[in-house]
Length: 321
Ligand SMILES: [Zn+2]
Image (cartoon, rainbow, N blue to C red; front, side, top):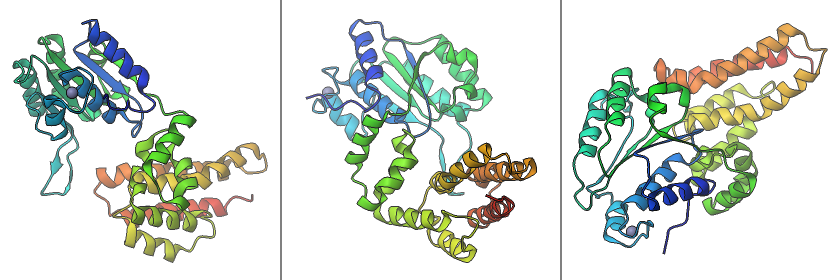
């Protein structure tokens, strides 16, 4: 029995299978689209189809079993490495990593002639790594398949893009999203919030499957629904207690939900002064930058966020709604 196709990306799956059957499969595929849209899951499924003895990702053949057990000798997945000392992900994918996988692809497969590499977070390659990859793309070996995952296509050199089969992974439509939500078995009371946070990218809310995270998110959302009157002490306590379990992007997404409505309203209101609007936009922008800046400048997340919330609060108070 064939495993279910990744919801929302069936067309890419079918194109892949079709080209494979016709023996016209390109050596390198570049899956691009928003974070959380399901690219990694799709890449894993395509790899499974490619390596499967029945070429269907049957889930039962020797190859599929090894893949499920993460012990397939002809499959490698790489991305940014975890730094055990600093307890965080490294910023870049380096040239040594790329050289390793290229020499792996140049070998002949152990189980068959086929080998697959999934290169996740390709946006994070530094220049040297990207140049090394380019060389590999120019001289592909028979039976090798490279599935590249990239969140923002503009971060990759055009020379790499032009040597790959480009597949855009679009956010899921409402119907697919509803189905994903029901499969996720989220706690009932988080459902309305969850569906407004997904934006068609199931990965955005994957963390909500954990009951504690869901509860902490719900409380955060309630605390921050009206920032101009929010209890700052309570916000800080909540951050201190739960920030380590809530993904930073979710924290921001929840702050942005009520703000979006305010921003839309002020757009229409001629009465609000230009200076006040600008302040609000600036404050919103600072909030949005917080997750990246925490990483880039090794900031302490809770105080850094709180200071931005205070700026936002001031901006909101400056508006006469
Ligand atoms: Zn199989």
